[in-house]
Length: 162
Image (cartoon, rainbow, N blue to C red; front, top):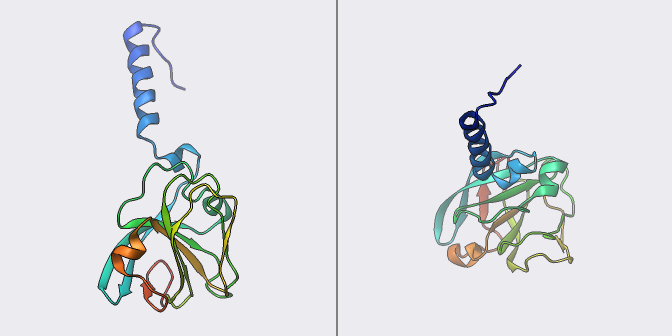
């Protein structure tokens, strides 16, 4: 059991620590959801690019996605894993996402199937893959152009491209 001093300084220090902890918590953590991270290697005609992304591999992580985030690292993003064994048509919603992002649909062997640059923010219109895929990779807006990502490029890591 924790006890607190009724002294003003102890209470002020406790309050300051609580405020600081809240300010330092990631937006996802503030929502009670944590993400594992994975290192991905993206192979394009322009070369090899290293990414570090959060992994959304369950419903709560997928539903939260990039909501409540204020930024995406230049080589960061979110890998939404659906079904590596049985690819499905994926529908990605960015309702409530205020960050500009690019979207890739990826097969289980890591092949980029579709590229969607500069997805509109906070849109009620979902983006649906044209064919069964294993994952969606959400990246900082402009990454597709910066790296020259095209269908047929490869993503290795995070369970893809084995």
